[in-house]
Image 1: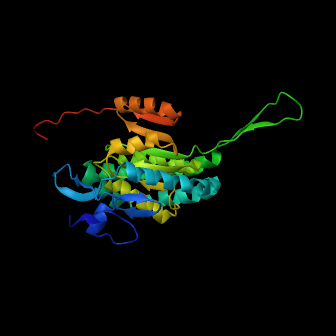
Image 2: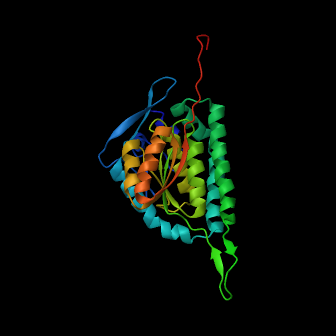
Image 3: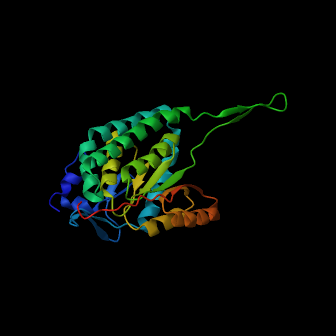
Length: 278
């Protein structure tokens, strides 16, 4: 636990107290309301490397409400204004890639070179979508009657709930958040319980890059409770999920109740064998 300050990067020093303040809502880091926590372990050594907040439905509801309140202001920003901020996110991710990669390796277990590659890939996602937001064109539709003009405009869907697994926590969260922010949506992210620390470091990057309070929120804790709030809360207008096919099917069924939009990436597996001489 003594090395925990090295896990986060940002403008302010971090002490052990901050270890439980991994929920980020409306621009501030906080603990779970209940005071619940859980341990994050290093899979290589099985040692506890941090104790983080165990949030649930209450924290997720507050995060969704903060995102909904921030939505009108973020929508009013032009695509060019949002792009400036997203490019700054990309720049800071690159500058802090070594620090965030070390954190990712500690909690996830992949080689350090792989972790750094993932962080740099996440930076590329933010830079790419910073530019793509400028190209979210509408269409002019040929009219049937004189004196009429028909055209379409693309509009932010609203608050987006993003749920990612443990294998690529930074890259997958970036893949969901970058296009959402670029389009003018606000987000609530839910990292896997095994890998919340590097994601929290990425959200500190959002703060330092100038993402307004409430636009990007993070809830660490129980996936079942957070997902339940995403499904039940009508302020959450879309869920983006990467994970198992069985869970994806259940989310799709539940989203139908509110005709809630959903994006799914399901069913990937990468089995391998570790031989004794490894």
